Image (cartoon, rainbow, N blue to C red; front, side):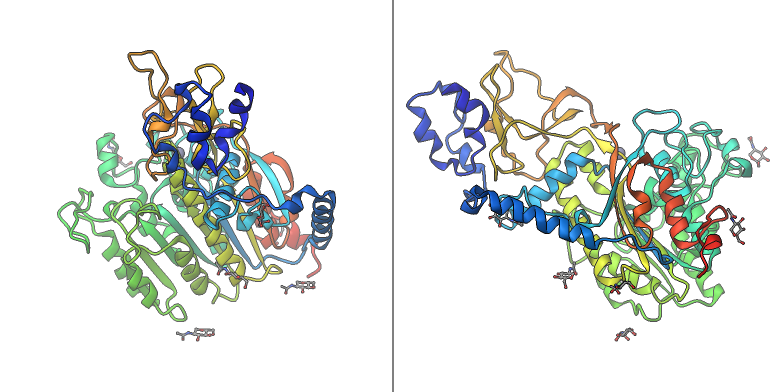
Length: 532
Ligand SMILES: *[C@@H]1O[C@H](CO)[C@@H](O)[C@H](O)[C@H]1NC(C)=O
Ligand SMILES: *[C@@H]1O[C@H](CO)[C@@H](O)[C@H](O)[C@H]1NC(C)=O
Ligand SMILES: *[C@@H]1O[C@H](CO)[C@@H](O)[C@H](O)[C@H]1NC(C)=O
Ligand SMILES: *[C@@H]1O[C@H](CO)[C@@H](O)[C@H](O)[C@H]1NC(C)=O
Ligand SMILES: *[C@@H]1O[C@H](CO)[C@@H](O)[C@H](O)[C@H]1NC(C)=O
Ligand SMILES: *[C@@H]1O[C@H](CO)[C@@H](O)[C@H](O)[C@H]1NC(C)=O
Ligand SMILES: [Zn+2]
């Protein structure tokens, strides 16, 4: 009986009757501490189809998968357009858990669900370490997957000759590297960045900034670390005033505070954080007026909807003071979804006959993981999957290369022996040591660490509502913020030259492969060799 309990029974979703069933023969410590806690497992029992008992079911499915695979031939035409999707912190366990979460939202068991990009024909694995760190951050990895050069932790758009915080070294042109977004602009393509974070945050900034400290997003941030403001420019100012930032056609995300002085109020009546008197949003508008280009600044979803995408060539949309809200709690009247932003960006960028480069980031998967809020991390991953589907639907596989990857992993693990259909946010089983339950998802470290109480007993997870979107999943040891993981990340590719991204490789080959596919950059060889 004990053996049975250990592995399986507690994971069964149809547990509604379990307390009654088990109370008669098991120790009380197995049971929910509060009456009804078990009812919090929301999943209705999911029937596993009888057909799964047949060998033919599986063999036919496998045969069909192989037939599909045979149709996925390499495409060797030129990629007119390149779209790079980054799930910030979207580790492989995040993908597995998110697809189960997605399936369970449709009332299925979940394990056999598929995120949109998991259907892409070619996949690989990227090694994410940076020059000075085995486990990297989002800035050095952005430099790798956008500029093709590995760098030091927390630095952007510079080589590893630049140490963290070394303003002087970062302005030496010999130490600066350029991103595929800049290569695309040189080739007269349109360019865009879309994110759910501040548009000055590490991932989007990797396309346009050169900074020895990713946190120097505004002059205030630089003043606080006592930097020479006449030598180094903050990241928001680089976006508005420098090349390639100034020439980016579509900029959508959050982060208004980084653009306005603290004496100025935003559209929502909130002050900026700059101390130099600047209103960089106004400056952006004036600059586009001076250039005589069709432009639009919007600050909410309605404004975005009203933009004439057939006319506008420059669009700046800042939908919150800081990061945009998690989709689970966002006011959808004010904040557009990642899919909606992606759609608007593609509508505008695709008007360029020369093509475009677009970066789209699901940036808050990472933040949710740092807070050990796995529910939010999975939901944000599903939102990224939807945005990818939007892009796939709007583009042609023969001329648009779409790459979906993560910058780095996290420490969330997917464990226990939960039964098929177990709520991915629920309990896996009870420990065979202390007989107390543990969730399916947990972290190596983070704020979800719960020390044993006075009784010496481990925290009892039956007492918690694990389905809450802000529930902090357990950690083996405490940290205010859960850390990144050092494991490889998956790379999914679709379109011309997607097959270049098969295998296990260094993360910095990604932009070089994308450049090869679309004849960008000075080192690419495809168009030199190709007769077309
Ligand atoms: C996944 O498996 C379940 C259980 O057998 C089944 O009901 C469901 O239709 C399957 N879903 C997919 C997408 O294959
Ligand atoms: C700040 O940088 C400027 C420009 O490089 C330089 O002229 C000035 O001497 C620097 N000021 C300090 C205090 O280092
Ligand atoms: C924008 O252009 C597309 C394609 O040419 C067209 O189908 C659509 O009706 C246009 N939309 C507007 C609002 O003009
Ligand atoms: C993409 O296209 C498919 C097939 O037409 C459709 O079922 C799906 O809803 C579309 N998805 C999005 C996100 O637009
Ligand atoms: C892409 O090109 C191939 C080969 O020319 C063709 O068979 C296929 O139908 C094209 N696909 C689309 C979506 O246009
Ligand atoms: C490819 O052609 C471009 C443009 O002519 C040239 O600048 C570049 O050096 C060539 N690259 C190689 C590897 O031959
Ligand atoms: Zn992070």
